[in-house]
Length: 100
Image (cartoon, rainbow, N blue to C red; front, side, top):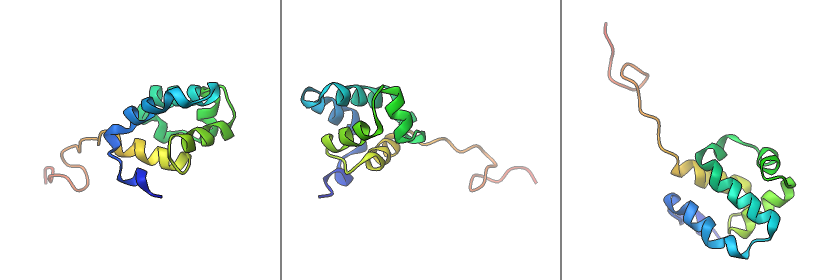
């Protein structure tokens, strides 16, 4: 089932919040940590998120699955898709040509 690949990335926080009431204590801590991290989640490992949520990496993966993702990587992809794109600077590769 690939239902999350079709989910709008902008809905990620709302999707997580809608599942909070059905999560155990450790799972709820992971979900709140993910919400607090926002786009910074993309740069973290499962172990780093687990440490921030004061739980085990297996709890992070289980929480992702309870949130209807296949695992942590799929959650990170959803977070990356909702992150704002950095603006290109003039003269940067692929941008408008600079002087000379």
